[in-house]
Image 1 (spheres, helix red, strand yellow):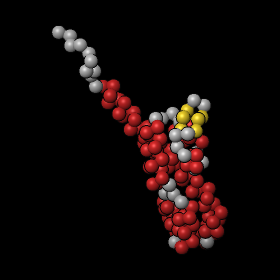
Image 2 (tube, rainbow, N blue to C red; image 1 turned 180 degrees about the vertical axis):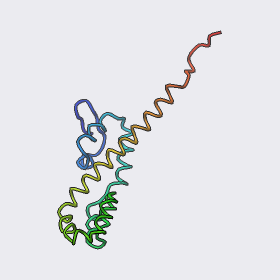
Image 3 (cartoon, rainbow, N blue to C red; image 1 turned 90 degrees about the vertical axis):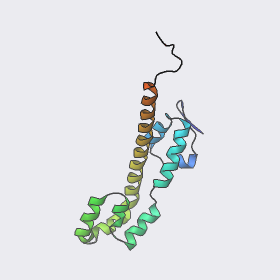
Image 4 (tube, rainbow, N blue to C red; image 1 turned 90 degrees about the horizontal axis):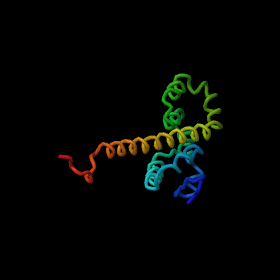
Length: 136
């Protein structure tokens, strides 16, 4: 368990190293069950650097699709990889692109979890209490 200024995170320290600092801060605000749900979802959606390099070397241009950047993939193909200049540059840029893509995914999952919680909370607030005495 990691403690961050009155926020308790029950997730593994190795897993936390992968996360963006703002995501870590927001995770500390949610309940332990949702933290575990976040970890399960992110573990399935996380993109790996190894697979991104496989896409870059063996299927040029598909690394952009793998990262969810379809517009860049189309531009890459139309310009034949910028006359192969993009291909060389992307060998060095790929780790940063992957990190940015994973951070976006983390924020997206956190938003989904928070949206679900707000929805359930609003449903609970609208339910009439069973303990209220009936007024005749």
